[in-house]
Image 1 (cartoon, one colour):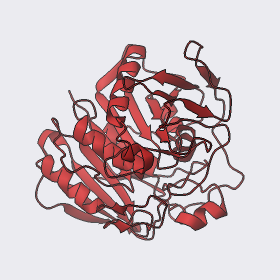
Image 2: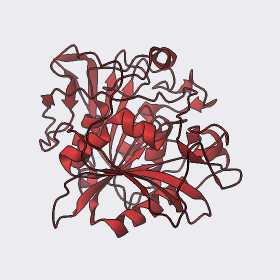
Image 3: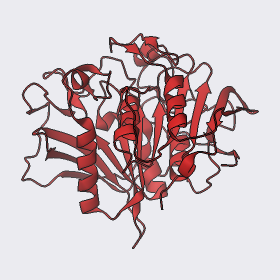
Length: 378
């Protein structure tokens, strides 16, 4: 990769869920790991019913608009690929669906299909993994990936983790290895779940097998790393904010490109590891070490190229290049940035007080999509 940068301005108003915050979403759906049965605060369609589908005409909004970024480089596209288009108003279909999984569970996922997909061409698939205690609906609103899918012609799959507290919708986690919560404690086969969902997507759409990507926040980022290790035959590249490598033996069969974004003021998942200020109750592993391990596995150059961004003094970009199969590994550290998903508005002052204000001048979603779509297997 040349390391060239292109910059554009994008502000997406959407609700943010801050991983590690004890909050639930009314009407959300999940799954009880104790019994294997679903628990919900709103009606759930039976497996024989048609999935619930809603056509969206406008993007999600919140009462308080996101403040204007301080510089014109509000979004830095961290890859020279120029085909990533800024978000558009959603006009496609959202469906909430339940499905029986091979391990005997009944689980939920959310799907966004843009209004216009390329005709006669395979389409990219993005798997978006919510943070610990989050939901598929929350992460869709938080990230703005629906709007990016509308603009760029890809399908977004938002799986849900398993629920840890049956009577409290939204308290869902992933088994990323050492973290987090009931999913990890019960050794839930979340890798198998994602693998199964990819099969389902390939039955419904002409999915481009060379452009299947995963992104995740916090516990979802830890899960994305696990997918890079254990589902590398299908996952081409991952994007992570505030995660780490959660398993000891990462032996990918194929090279997986990585973009990792981490705030240096993130106390919920400190970049160098250690106890966080959230509710996970674990000693987090080092995010820097996770990136180094993947760079080594991808047989990249030993030392990264470290660059600053003249118009964004908070950012430092470390890129491991000359990797096998062009599977670049990149770490972006953001001075002063908290645990909140970057570039998108906080739901409330109370939520921001628990994990910090969202960093405004870098849109994590657009940066990730631009990086991911620049990596494809042929």
